[in-house]
Image (tube, rainbow, N blue to C red; front, top):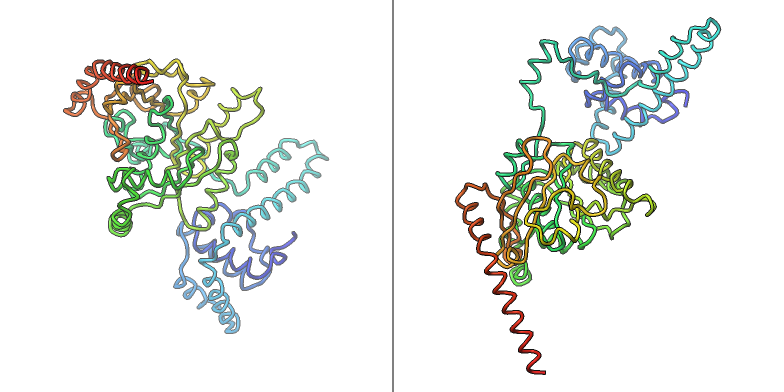
Amino acid sequence: MKTLNEYGKNFKLKLIASLLTDLHFLKRIYEILKTEYFEAEVEMWIVDNIYEYLIKFKGLPTLDYFGIKVKDISDDDFISAVGEKLKLIYAHKKATDLIFVKDEALKFCKSKEMKIAIENSVKYLDRGDYDSIRRDVNKALNAGEEVDHGHFYMQKEEIDRRYEEEDRYTIATPWDAVNDLMDGGLGLGELGLIIGGPGIGKTWSLINLGVAAVEAGFDVIHYTLELNDRYISKRYDSIITNVPINDLKYRVDEVKSILNDKRENHGYGQMIVRFYPSRTATVNTIEAHIDNMIDLYSINPKLILIDYADILKIGESEKYYKEIQNVYSTIRGVGGIYGACIWTASQANRSSADDEVIEGDKVSDSYGKIMEPDFVMSLSRKLGDKLTGTLRAHVVKNRFGPDGVTLPGSMNAAKSGRLEINYSDSYKGKKVKQQMKNNSAVERSAISDRIKEMQEDLDNM
């Protein structure tokens, strides 16, 4: 397109509305969005004054500012036209498609910059000035992009800034002992992984993470690739209301009352549970769904749960080991794009079933999965643990603090599904560790009872 007029009148009004309401967008585009692209004199005047205010005061102008500026105009008709145009512009401040308008405007301006660079390259080529060609083309390619030249380590201002600002904004887990090891929790743009065998409690652990974030007021999206969304939601109900999952259907009114109270009076965030059958959703599928949640419902997820990444749809089977690592790398990138932290889970291999503690080499299929996450924790439960509700949480990898640490924990899915991970030297931690010492006797007793039952069945045949 040659001018913005070809997009239509409303597009230009929405674009100027974006300049007046989105400082970040204005800073990105003002150097490449030329006022003459608007063609209409009144629109050009308004945009010129927006730019003037930005350069002088580093912010967004208000209607009061324009009210003062029009006093310098002697043409009453032009003053009236400015007033009418500003009314139309401000009427579009909350248009639902402003994201599209801003994206399209950036594309338009970048194409204009590239055209100028190509036209200039002809004269540079005639005189062999290849450096100028490269400079102009690179400038056009980077036009409107985010400006971040990095952290200037030795500058005084940067030294002050790195101690004034938090370098990580974290979403805490429900477990203080884990948060301490992680320096507060998992940070935005970071990836956490939970490893465990079948029936260990991987899904329950992800749900516990979701509950903690929602209770803290964050929006959460939980992608489930095995259990359907209603069943996962019932598990959330059980943890939040403390109603045993098997009792939920008998206590529906109580559950509704508790959830309504949490939503209205306790500042809970939004929770979306989205089900995709195994091997049908890709990372792109998830990104598209997140975009829809942001655009349609203004849900801005700060925690994304994927249960679990191994059963996303990936490439050809003969390239599985490389593809699965790429999936984890891409998932981590999604966290960076949306400013969210991401937790997922993975199966441990069969040989881990008898291990007290599951190490990283027991992850199934590809060790490459361990390389991408920022934090990896395994959960292990032997037969005795399952009978008594105890477990071991072992920190396999930790970019924020010590690893190789094993913490005592407990979970009883038949009650509420709330998973606890304790400090080793706390009262609860010591109690759980003592219970674990007794698990061998419990396990032997259970096996003995089962053998007796089998013998009785044989005798009665």
